[in-house]
Image (cartoon, rainbow, N blue to C red; front, top):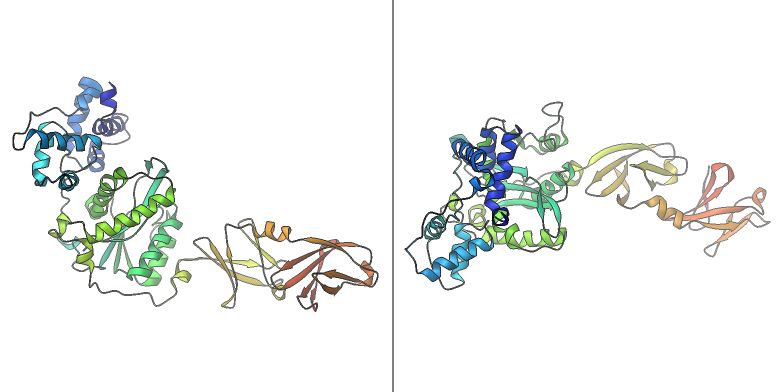
Length: 437
């Protein structure tokens, strides 16, 4: 029984069969997920109903006689070390042992011992789906969550060029939030320019439940002059290229490396992307590499600041203490704007404050500036002459406050003195009074 549970192909079939039997998936849906035919899924279900989990085990087919026994044993050993390895991957690994064989030969050896993985069906798209030039169309999608040892559950946000199969942008995150999609898009647009079309499914990261044109994703593309193409539920082939790339990344990258955290995962993925672009001979490109196919592509870069295009914009009223509040965090604003409205632009962990198009300040939205300001609060006693001393300068508060304890805080180039009754006096760093409120 343990041998069965250690067989990854059996476990993957079992998970799919259970979802079919529970009514969660139809056999047609399961066939699309597994990239198999309806008849194959039907056979798996019948075998499971007849023999239980043992019915899902691949049956041995005899042994190949095309190679020496030592080479056959090495091929099978490499496969059983990691069953997600493809025939091409094992062929490349054999070259390190000084053995040169064809990929099909490796596949036949594995087939003889029941260790082969069925060749994925070539999803033949419609003729008008093949875009003739790089940057004509990009596919964008989020890979289903996968548990990576040493990291946990991760989601790969990826963009692929339709014509060259080049990876235009990609990064692993621990959630499927739309902000991660926008970060990958912005990086890809900054480096490679803009595509004519973006092809995506109808996930909530891309399309609003209110219908077409309401999502931030669509508004960004519209502002940049990029056409968005949504995949119909009945046409899974439309995004088949990126789905196959997800499978290749799982087999060739994730299963071949050890990771100690999310940063390590993304660093190694960046290295793998260079290999994929410059070395990998893509079968759909007649053996050319994606990088070679993409080289020389015409690039159209945005004529506007991408940071302004991708940011979320909000409006806030400056409070009496010359601060604004956003998502339970407080940010300082020049006191001359008390009572007025300012514009906030938020993207990728940065919050920028504008007034009439002028930048007032930029802040890290992960930092609690309220706490930072509170840590700078100091207490002083107003002297009989109505002054207090702070950082080697004298500040006149008023003789009416003589003997009282007040709180003093420096924020940028301002000195703020907080009095009783929620009153405050604001000075510049030269001791000149700016505002009494």
